[in-house]
Image (cartoon, rainbow, N blue to C red; front, side, top):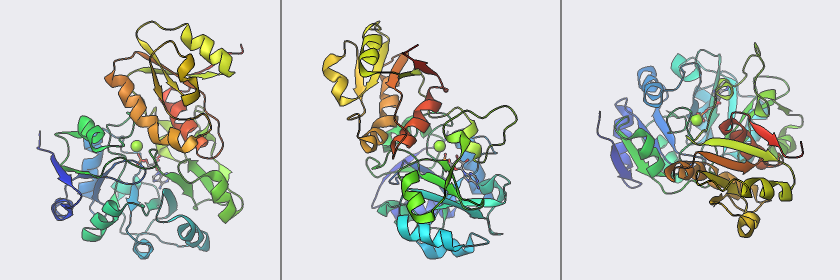
Length: 338
Ligand code: AMP
Ligand code: MG
């Protein structure tokens, strides 16, 4: 086991030196904490997969500090990419483009494309400037909820990586929106803080990939390999409930068995007769995204066996919350009207 350093945001020189030497550093971003390695060093990137237990066929996102860095990483930089970058970078949007020759196979997992993002987090961008473009998936053990604090990272990664930079709580709380420009029309592969509606305002037509809302059918190819895996799951069994507010309250209140809890909205609180974790108001999708993963981790810390949750709306950032929760629940939705 290696010793994992806990660094503060003013110790970036130490973090950059680790990265230049092929080590692993978890860094704060505005979405979730990322587990970073030098994106141009295949051996360093391979360590990310080992530390997380991540399947090797799941490609990584390369993080850059400014738009000018993208030119060396991609083979083509179309007008549509320039428009997206202008509208949403720095920010929670990942753009997939044909990959440049310098991208190691470990990053692209053998695909001929590469995913690029410019994060809107000062610490992350300063670290990139001091080192290099950084390949970084979420800094959790593969399959578990993504980390939104340095403590979450330590809970999963202590002894497995060189350092964690403590940058406080992440603002967005779910991973970036992923859109591919390698297909025509562009395709949304993963919803996040930048919404489908916002992408359509800039690009016109954008297709919602099937895998965002549904499990892949047997034999169906994953456009985004990450979406085929069960994901974001706490140890507790997560069950989504679909139906009216009355039906929801009646159902969960009948399950005050000491091992169950509810991922609820603020409005539910006065009516609940069992333990709960509130993710925010029913219509406040941003707050729900922000609290989702930390609530799932807290449910495990409190030792619940089952967590019931509302089946979220799919508009705006709600689509990102739905996409994560439905995977956390292994696509199990209980229709209370039936
Ligand atoms: P994570 O790093 O855990 O936030 O996951 C990155 C996501 O981006 C995964 O769902 C990957 O499958 C997806 N991704 C990364 N690179 C590509 C690519 N070149 N083509 C399609 N999807 C990608
Ligand atoms: Mg992840």
